[in-house]
Length: 358
Image (tube, rainbow, N blue to C red):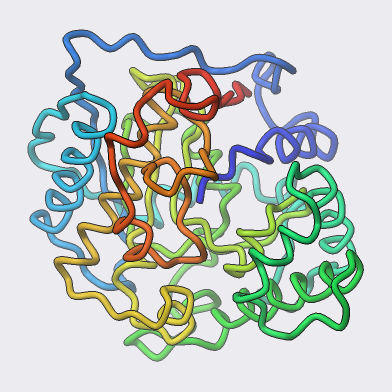
C-alpha cells in the first residue's frame, strides 16, 4: 500500500504548480534520496505518536502497543531487528496537526488534488494518468487485467487498454465517493463537512506526506483517520481499485533518526463499513485480529524505512509484498521469513527503494 512508486511524479507536479510552496532550497532535488539508516546492535528505538480523529473509532494506549508489538514480532523475524518498548505513546489531535499545514499550503496544493467531496474531479485527467501508469508496468496488459478483474465494480467491455482504463476509473470513482455518503456513529459522512468541525484536508495523502517533510518528531505515526483521496498524478492501479485508500506510507522526514517516517491508518482494520469488508474479502475482524494485522502493515512500512526494500511481487511469503485490495488476513497467512530473507531478490536488497528527499 506504499505510494513511493509515484511520489516523485507528485512532487515534481507540486514544484510545477507551486514553485513557492517550500522554503528556498527545500524543493525536490532530482536524484536525491534518503540514505540507508545506520542501525547499531540490531536494535531500534523509534519514537511513536498517535494522531487521533475524535469522530473515528477509539483506540486505547493498549491497542496502540498491541499494534507495535505485532510489528515488532515481524520485524524481528523478517529483518532481524529488535524494537524497543516505546513507553507511553503521545496522542495528538488531528485538527491541531493539520490546521497549520492547511492554512499555509492549501491554496497551492489544491491544484493537484481532486475535490471529490464536492464532486469536482477531472476524471478524464485521472484516466490519462492511469494510461501512463499502466504502460510503464513491466507486466503485460493481460496480467494487469487479470490482477484487477476481481476488484472492478463493472465488467470490462473488452480486454483492451481503453476498456480497462475506463473500468478502473469507474471503480476508483465509485469507491472514493462512497465515503461522502457513508457515515460514522455521529451520523455524519466519513469524509466531508461536519457541523462544528473545521474543514481540513485530513483525508488527503498529500498532506500526510507533507506532515513528514515538515519534520514531525516521530519515526512511527499511527492514526484512526481514513486516508482516501485522488491526485492528478500517475496513481497505481491497485490504489485506484481501493478507491484511493492509502493504508500506510513511508515519507522523507528530516527530523527522523532514520531519515523518514512511516504512518499507518488503523481504519481499514477497525472499520465494519460494507465497502471495507468487501475489499477485505468479505471478512470481519475481531479487535485482536485487526490490531495484529495493522501491525503487519507497520512492519511492511518499516521494511521500506529501515532497509529501503521494494515490493517483491512474485514472492507471497514476503511481508514486503503488498496485500491485494485490503485482504490482510489472506496476506499475512502467507508470510514465511525463511522463504524471503533480505537479499533474496532484487526487491529485497537494501537500497532497492529510493525515498525522495524534497
